[in-house]
Image (cartoon, rainbow, N blue to C red):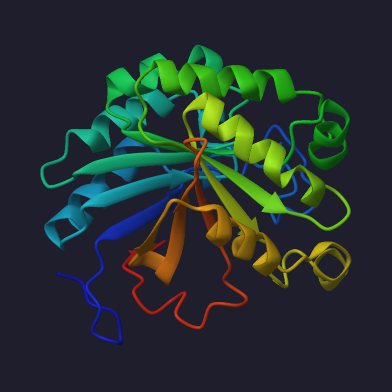
Length: 258
């Protein structure tokens, strides 16, 4: 088993399959690098080889990320190969959801267990302002397709942005409840690749939102990972708040490498 310098066992592996993306979100370090050349990407066999070795060292869960992993023409093959490797208990993916409508069922059949879908707003105009593309309807269709295909749980990643979507939090909570998905409200973090202007201009502390969730919740569960709380609300919604900037125990129980 792999252990980090602090003696913690490493059981989760995140693999970035591509830097290419079909969106151009203003806050993203990838910046929609549609022109990135494919030779920099691992082949399906290379990904499988890494996962096979990792499995022998104690890795049990694989998260596929990007860029946008669904841009890879061999993504079904990639998922199938790694899902068949002995010892791997879960294969999940983070995606912007725009390509899910036609792929969710195939991904499930290939062995994908669950999915995180990035969705910062339910407003078409805001969505285009954030991503540079008018693809909100595709994402909403993708969410429905993922749920119908049995990818469970489906989680929505909502990055909280000051002056952009902080007024939509409760609409998003209601949407998540009706759609049967889990909502993750994520705090914007400062990173050199993003730039201080983005952080300074758009960061908002989610603490007031979390306090209101705590007040409303019928049940609260503390997750070991990130030492964060999941709030179960009266309308059936499940909401998590990811606060890496204001949680001193955020990294304490990490079991991931990337």
